[in-house]
Image: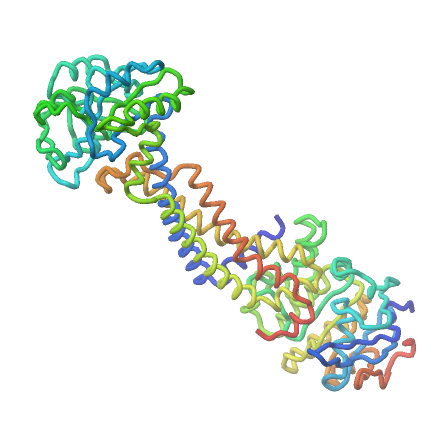
Length: 380
Length: 232
C-alpha cells in the first residue's frame, strides 16, 4: 500500500504517547482476554456431560439435603431410563485446604454404564471395583499432586465427618473433568453409618428427546413424598453449581464492558490530540489533492492499528502466558485446562479494532472534513 | 500568450457568526500562461483569499474562475481535489513539510495520488530535488534542514507533478535575506526555464520585483496593475 509508510510514521510520531497507549490497551485486553477465558472455562465445565444423555436428580429443597436410596429403584423403573447411579460430592481436600478439587463417592459398578464418557483402562476399572477404598483419579490431578497408581492418600474432612483413606487404583481421561477423584459409595456409606441417603442420582436416558419428559416424570413421582426432587439436565446442573458463586457471567461481562468503555474514552482522548496536532498537515495533504475519503481512511487505519496492536499485545501475550503458566496450580485447581483459545483471541482482536473505530471515528471524520483554508490558517 | 487563469467579477464574503465580512468585491483579472504574478496589498486586502480561490482550495461567493479552460468554481470538492493534484503546486510561507517524512518522502507525497510506479516516482522525486539543488539531502528530515532548505524541498514537492500552476503564499516570509534571495532565484528559474505560471502573494516589494507583474489589492478591489502588458 502506497500510504503504509505515512500511516506507520504517523502512528509513531509521538513514540512515548503511542507506546503508552498501546500498553494501556495491552493491559486492558489482557484483563478482558483473561475474563473471557474464565467464562469459556466455566462454559466448558457446564458442557462437561454434553452428549452423555444424563439427568441429575437432587432434593427439591437444596443440594445439601439428601435423598433416600429408595428413590433410585423407582427412577430406574421409568421407561426410557437405561440406568442410574448414586453420586455424592464429598468436598474433602488433600493435606492443605488450598489443595481443593472435586471428589465424589460413586457407585463403582456404574462407571461403565452411567459414566461411560470417563475413559478408564479395563484393568484399572477392575482394580477400582475390587478395592472398597480404591480411588479413580483424573490424569491432571495425578500430575498436580505427583501421585502414582498404588499410592495411598488421605483426604481431609470438610463437610462429612470422616477422612477418606484411599489407594489409587487407576486413572481416567475425560475432555473436561480432568481433576476429579472418585471412590466407592460403599466406603462412604459405611463410614457415615449407612444412612441410606445420597445427594444425587444420575440417570442415564436412552433417547435425548425424552429427557424433558422423564425429568418431569421423576419430579412428579416424588412431588408429594417427604423427599421431593428437582431434576436437571447435566448442563443445567453444572450451571446451577456455578451459579452458587453468583451470576459470574453477568459480573465478568459487566467488568469487561466497563474496561472496554474506559479504554474507548482514553483512546478517544489520545486520538483527538493526535488529530488536532496535525490540522495543518492534514490541510496540506488535502491541498495537494488528498480527497476527504482518503484522509479519513488513512487516519482511521492509523487509529485502528494503534488499538489492534495494543489489543494483540494483551490478548496474544495472555495466550502465551497461560500456555506457560499452569493456572490449575496457581488457582489450586479452580481453573483447569485454562487458556486463551482462538475464539477469545478473535473476540479480543475484533473488539480492539472496534475500539479504534469508535474512539478514532470522530477525530478522523472531523480532520478529514476540515476545510483546507481553515486548516492552513490554524496555528496549533 | 494564452490565458491560463480567468477571474471574472469574483466576490468572496466570509460569515463570522451573524456578521458577513466581504473580502473580495468583484475582482476581474486574467493570468496568462507563463506569467509570474505578484499579489500585493495590506493585511486583509484579500490577496491570500484570491490566491486560495485561484488554487481551488476555497470557493467564491460570486463570479467565475476558470483555469486552463475549466470553470473550477463549479467543481465539487472531490473534483477540486483531483484537479489540484494534477494542476496546482503549493508553496507556503511556513513550508508545511510533513515532519515524520524525510525530504524524499515529502516530495513523493503528491505522486502517491498518481498511477506512477515506485521506480517512476523515484525518478520524478530525484529530478525535482535536483532542480532545487537538494539531491544530496533526500534522506534528511525537515528538522535536519535549514529554513531555506525546507522551503526548497517544499518547492520540489510543488513541482514534482509538473503542475500547470504554482501558487506561493509569502514564500520568503519566514526566511532570512540570503535564503529569500535563493528562493526567489529558484522561482524565477522555474518561470523562465520551465515555463511555470506562478502566482505569488507577498508583502515584500523586493520579492514582487522578481515577478513579471504585480497586482495591488486594497479592501477587496484591484487598485493597481503594474508590469507585463499582456495582462488583461
